Image 1 (spheres, rainbow, N blue to C red):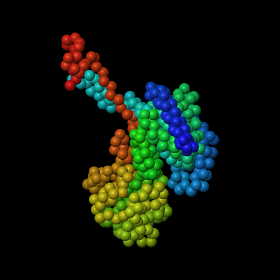
Image 2: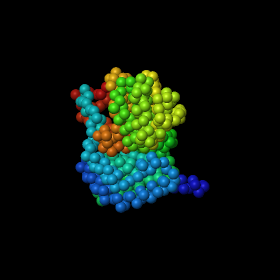
Image 3: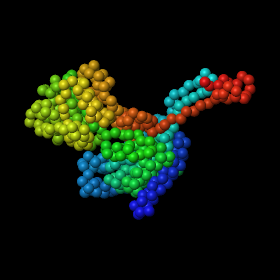
Image 4: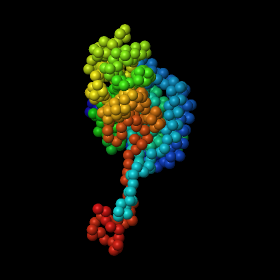
Length: 442
């Protein structure tokens, strides 16, 4: 056996060991009352408020290493923590504590003609694997959501945030221990590097589900290589379509917010589509608004013809297909709403698509014609967020169609089990028993 394969085998064995411990811890969590889980989360929030001196130096070191490595500004922004952001993370944990506990919720139920009582009940997933990058807030969000929903979680947060995540996981595990709960309910596998991520993806039977969160490349790799079931959180190539019937002031506010409020995140708009009827009056204003806010613009020929003094570079197929994560945006003029829908179908990642219009018929055509996790009418794409939807912290935005779609919060971290209660019912015609026993199910 080569030295590399020996190292890989050792990393795999360690990841599997932690997964087994997480499985044992998940069985403890599954039986906790809501009061016990909420007390744990409130204690965690208080510990995070007191942890600035423990967490921020590691984050500063991560930022310095990231700048030296040439990480883009969008990733550095996601990576950065300060006292205000740490306080916001603690507040998000408190919000999770305040939310209803999904475990035990009856999704549906009925009594059959033969007297059997059946009900479908939410139960924890078990062990959740999170693979993400340069997002220390996800470390806490994932842990809080997992604990509230009765799950254990294994975290692979990537090398860019290694010191930040190590400190945060240390705080979480210490709180678990002081609350009399198994600290292995939350564990990191970052010390195993990329091989640990691969081992996590191969831990079928030990890990129940993997949720990737990050750029398109990371997500595609996990979806392609994992033998553990994956809930795909997609990248966000989001569009804003300004319809012929758009009110100018509303259109300008929404476009500016969707692109510039926080351009590094997945719900920021990457492409602006404008109906040809508004190319002469509204498009120049939109381009000027974006340019004034330092957005680098790429447009088709008709967009450039209406740009005036605003610099607009030629757009390409590759650019229309790009999630920029920064102050860049593609623009196109379309002749009809159907043309806008066709553009979205071609380039969208199925995350969030918005229309600005005062025409209710156009709005209905948009919502019926767009295939995305979230469809906005007269609202910024930036509202696609678990917190904004009232879910508290989110573990990601799912762009797939099975199990979960859109912002994933507590209910999406559960599965269901069927509980069937009877009083002696049997299925077979010749089942032994007393005369007059309940009839069989059909």
